[in-house]
Image (cartoon, rainbow, N blue to C red; front, side, top):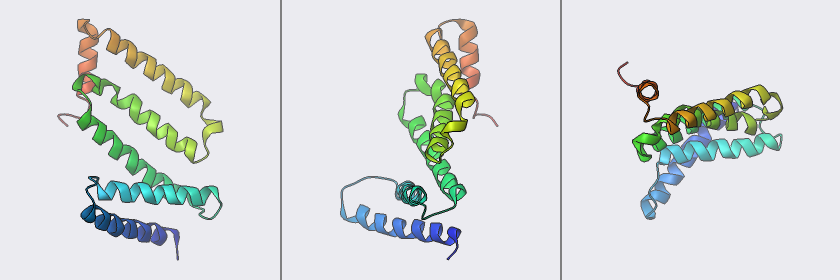
Amino acid sequence: MNAVMVVFAMLCGFFVLLLVIKKYTAWQFCVLCASVSLTWMSLLVLYWLASFADPVLIAVLMGQSVVGIYYLLEKKVPESLLLFRFPFFLTATALVFVMLGYAPTMMRSLFLLVLLWFITIGMYAYKSNPKVQQIIEEFMNCCKNW
């Protein structure tokens, strides 16, 4: 069986299993999100154990989880903290690379990520300044009106 078929079979299996669990328990969760997460977590363990050889498929699923968590947090955090969306997204993406074994090659990326966090925290600290507030509004509206 090819790797894509394995991934799809796992997604379907976890989806059905989690639908049943959700129906018979009081747990509230997104079955799709949980299915994707359980699939990539299982495949990642298999990858680490050298039993699954396609990190690209794992990375695609992990990326789906990063975006899902991003949107969930976007709904849950106060609007004043939405300025941190982009640094959070890049940090989560960097964690995916680390889990897939790219940590040794990420020093420059880590420097850029830390710099981005410092800039964003600085902007947040000076948000009462009208010029900084204008920049923050541009960041906040990055995904609107397109």
